[in-house]
Each structure stands twice: as C-alpha cells, then as structure tokens.
Length: 371
Ligand SMILES: Cc1ncc(COP(=O)(O)O)c(C=O)c1O
Image (cartoon, rainbow, N blue to C red; front, side, top):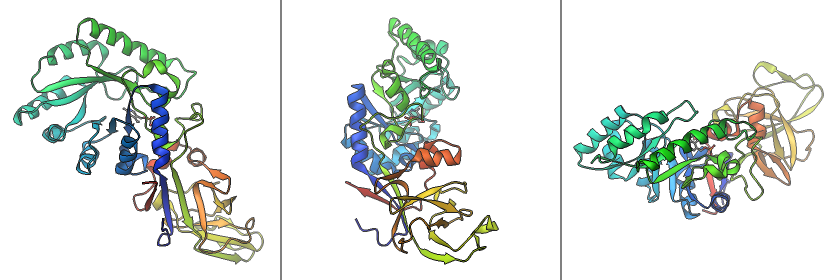
C-alpha cells in the first residue's frame, strides 16, 4: 500500500467488513442484507458491497435508486433493495435491473403499477409497515386490504413485508417489544388470510444484537458491519472490529513563543514555548470545529488546539517531543495500542457515530486493505 502521495487518507480493512458480516450470519442464522447506503456509511458503497457479498450477504440495502443502479452497473449481482422512496419514473429501470423497492401506500403502488405496465414488466416490492417509527410505512390495519388488492396484480409482486425499529438500541425500553407485537399480530392475521408476503424482515444492527425474535427471514444490519456500536447501551460483542482508520501526516512542527495565538480567532494562545504541529485535515473533511478533540501521535493522545480550519488543524505536541514533519497521525482508529473511536468523536460532536462516518468527505482518499 503506497500512501506517499497522500497527506490525509482513510484505510478501510475489507477483511473486517467480511468478518463482521460472517459474525452476524452466525448470530442470526438468517439471510443478511448489508445496509450500505450513504456511501457505505462513508466506507465506500461498492467496495463494501463486494466484501459483504463475498462474506455471504445475499442482499444489499440502499436508500436511493441511484445507489442501487451504481451497484448493478459495477457488477454487484446480489439482491438489491431500495429502502427509501423511489420516484415512479425510475420503476422501469428498477424492473430492468431487478431491484426491489419499498412500497408503503396505495397511491404509490398505483403509480408504480402504471410505470411497470408501460414496459410490460413486473416490479418486485416489499411492503413497509408503520409500527412506531413514524417515518415511512402503511398502517397495519390497511395492510390486509392492500395485499388482497395486489395479490393478483399483474405488475407488482409484493415479495416482502418489513418494518423498522425506533429504539432497538435502548434494550431497557419497552417500545421495541410493542413494535414487534404490532408487526407479529399483523403477520399472523395475514398468514391466516394467505396474504403474507414470503419474506419478512425487521432487524437493524441493534435488533440483531438485542431481539432474536425480530430476525425473521432476513436481517438488515448497517452500523455493525462496519464494526461500530449501534449505541453506547448496545455495544457490539467481542469478535467485531472497526474497519476504518483515518490517518494524516504532520505537515509542520514548530516551536512557538509564549503568548502566540493559534488559528482563527486566536482562541488558543501559547502560555510558554510550545511545540505546535499542523495536520492537513479540517471541517472540509468532516473533522468538525468542536472543542476537546485529540489525535494519536506515536501512540499518545495529543490535543487539537485552536479552531479547526477548513483544511488544517493544529496539535499541541509537547508530550511527543520527537514528532517529526511527515510522520503519521491517527484521527480515528488505533496506533501503538492507543485508540480513538468513532464513539469518542461522536461524543465531542454531541452526535452519534453514524454521523461521524457518514460525514467523512468524498475528497478523502480511501485505501482498501485486503481488497
Ligand atoms: C430501513 C433500514 N433498515 C436497516 C438500517 C440499518 O440500521 P443500522 O445501521 O442501525 O443497523 C437502516 C439504517 O438506518 C434503515 O433505514
């Protein structure tokens, strides 16, 4: 791996992704849909799709049709499902490329059926049920009537039914049991009426860990395949590992005199002679203007000082007097036994680890290990 040409880059270990997918398969004993929307949670859609399918994921789940089409165009031949909204004009493409879509109301189904009729094709759809997320989904009481109407519909095969949990990452909260109750009562009713679609799914990563009864025929893990915790209350068990490391090179190391301002606004002022380093990473890369951030230099945690700029930020290097321009710094990941996790950064940003990795800018070069 040659990183000489880069000043900052991401290293993504595809073996970690493969091992995490295999760990989920072992835990669930069902089919796996690897959720790789939003550029594979920042890790790279196509590379993650390849690794996940090599490790046995039979499905890839994305948010938008553009993502699904990019996977097909680049040779991913697993089942692919768009979990979010698909504009009706894209239905002919969905049919041509054998991509499953989500349906959640009758008007939408009608529009999709019309588009499918124009190309004399059959659309493969999964009915999304609202059980408590309050986002997309048909109310359970409308599902039987809908499925009866579409049972013999020439243009749409409803071959799946699914729901999504709002709080599965908070295992102590009742809400997921309630959502599951609503969903399973509906499934029972549909089975009795011979209307239940063949494939049932509901579990995100947190439900994979906390609710075995939610595994059904297929699980839909996202964050866990990247080796990141669904939440601090739902950490991954041993055996999972993060795939991503964010590195940069020190581009400058200088000793500044006492009373010298550092970065915009001079929010940080040296109190003595201080060794100040620079790394070429900033908010343009997804490294935010948040106080209290640290990076790893020679296995030591050092403070980021002064405001983070668009493309650069400064480090207090007194604790690592030998640090030299050109050497590697780790912003996210491990170095010589020390570690900064996506959870650590999320804590500084008052957000969740999902947002940290999804926020990694496109301009960051992504280097794939074990490709
Ligand atoms: C419908 C659906 N299923 C599964 C997932 C995967 O969730 P997680 O990354 O928490 O495993 C998502 C992601 O938000 C989703 O929207």
